[in-house]
Length: 157
Image (cartoon, rainbow, N blue to C red; front, side, top):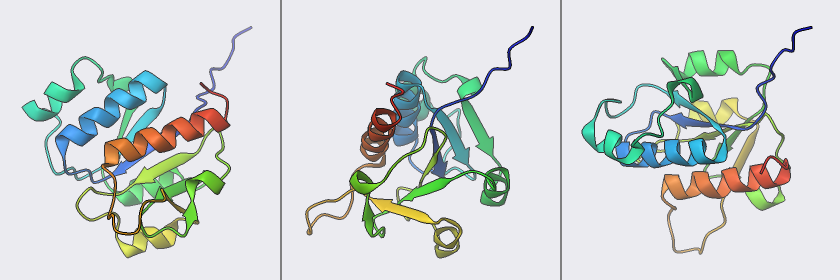
């Protein structure tokens, strides 16, 4: 009898990332915590960029990273899955949200977030609460916070 392997676990998706060092740090976080990474192109850098490779080191496993050519391809592949958008424009805190084991957690560009049309495609829009006079956390820090909470809630770590 053969067993079918089931890919269980959260996925971190980056919408058109534009800072190679942040993406590299996120790849390392995902590799160390066992999350799949999905990148929605176009990126603001080449995956062969030396700054990117310096941060990624030997943590880049192409089997654990899925690249989408554009957001249409990404959303088409996710039509029967739950996507959670992390955004400073969210009204609900991640601390009050119940994560599921197969969620895809979407993060916008460091420089601009995601466009309004992407906001409209996602039902769950969450934020990380911050002091009122602060704009945003670094995306790599935000991914680590949210991924840790998701893994804790789903008991995958």
